[in-house]
Image (cartoon, rainbow, N blue to C red; front, side, top):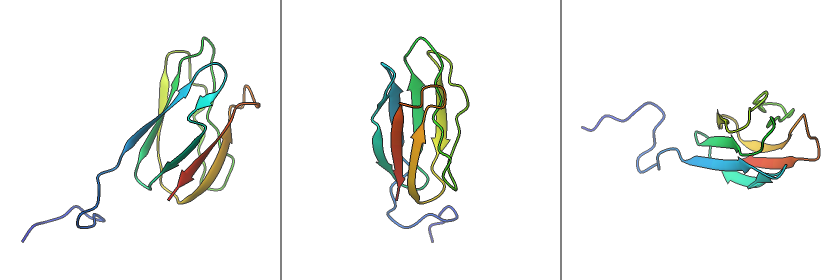
Length: 98
């Protein structure tokens, strides 16, 4: 008998890692779809700080991501999470968690 990790489904793919670059005062990819358990890494390539902040229920808040630094979030809740940079509110993105 083969033992499986708790919550793991037979044949289920391992969690994936996705990257969102913050560059030119924009999120790239601004519209991203992931699965519960996947991680998303926001990498700040700009010379000033940014945030990735979703005020939705079950959302996330990176707080300040310094230049040349990153922040990682593991998707825990299904839903669509619109987010912004609270320092530069014109920067917008959406994380879709399936």
